[in-house]
Amino acid sequence: MSWSFKIGSIAGTAVRIHVTFVLFLAWIFVAGFTQNGADAAWSALAFMILLFLCVLAHEFGHIFTARSFGVPTPDVTLLPIGGVARLARIPEAPGEELLIAIAGPLVNVAIALILMVIAGADLGAGRLAAIDSTQVSMVDRLAAVNLFIAAFNMIPAFPMDGGRVLRAALATKLGHIRATEIAATIGQWLAFALGFFGLLYNPILIFIAIFVYLAAASEAQVVALRAISRGVPVRAAMMTQFATLTADEHIDAAIETLLRTSQNEFPVVDDAHRLIGLLGRNEMIRALKTQGPHARVGDAMNTDVPTISHRQCLDEAFRILREKSAAAVGVVDASERLVGLVTSETIGEMLMVSNALPAGARVGPLSRPANA
Image 1 (tube, rainbow, N blue to C red):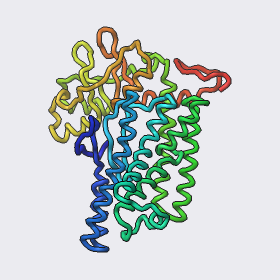
Image 2 (image 1 turned 60 degrees about the vertical axis):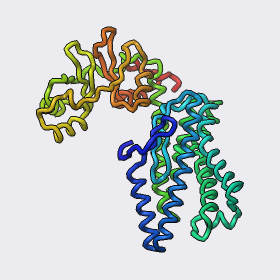
Image 3 (image 1 turned 45 degrees about the vertical axis):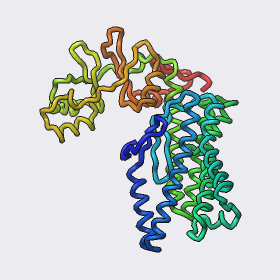
Image 4 (image 1 turned 30 degrees about the horizontal axis):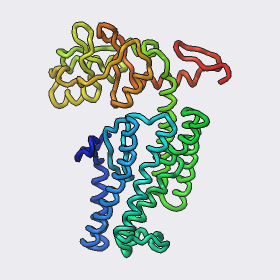
């Protein structure tokens, strides 16, 4: 995730902190110091750090459960609104997704119970009502907040865990794609409800509503892209008309190529037309600023570029794009020569064409059933 930095690793998963999270902690400290003095400021800061450690534990509940099903977990990022664990993929088996989804909230419930048993936390109605009061002990507040996190995450709306639980339940009867469509629609309607209450009571709910709405739409699009790419030969959907660069070219020549094409990513090939790297627009501009126009393309390119055979299916390219967060996947022939390129934009265009097709029509590898 951009604007984040790594602070360490836990069990092979990188832990990252977004810069806005640091600014948020600084704001908490300054606000507490201004209103109630140094002691209150340090107390508020300590509570927020403990709270986000609980959020981190929540995310690792998802991570460790996902790993048990063979799902890679590259990193987790802490944000002011919580944590985001990046899973390479979401299992389509309903039972697996259900267990991964509920693992996080169960961790928060476990933390609350441990605080009650070991630290004597009081979760009476009066304590829960005064959860934001500094007159309530930190242990009581921390236990109450963990229960709130568990309950809030079970709201049946993407990207909350409840949205994934709902999809898993629906998928047992309706299939993964239809279940996603229904769960995403419910999530978007809940987002509208949150936004309405935000207008009446708390503006923060408006920002949460926007986040929920966009996340629900994004989840539905990802599943639709995965479905449309399944079984389609990659050679039937790859981009074959594109400009290439060589490693010995200068950045100024690459810039000229950038200006006369509509590409954002440029494959770098050797004399045998084998893929050796990828140079994106942003890397090109950065090299121009820092190294000058005569810098070599080979010194600025990304050499870690995934490739697949031209005989494979498009869903494999889509999987690699998702799991590796790659800008593009090179398609190579039996001699390892570059013959095509697949990007997120390529697959996105396929989705637009598929959605626009009339019932019973066919364009290239895409078709829509007559009863659609």
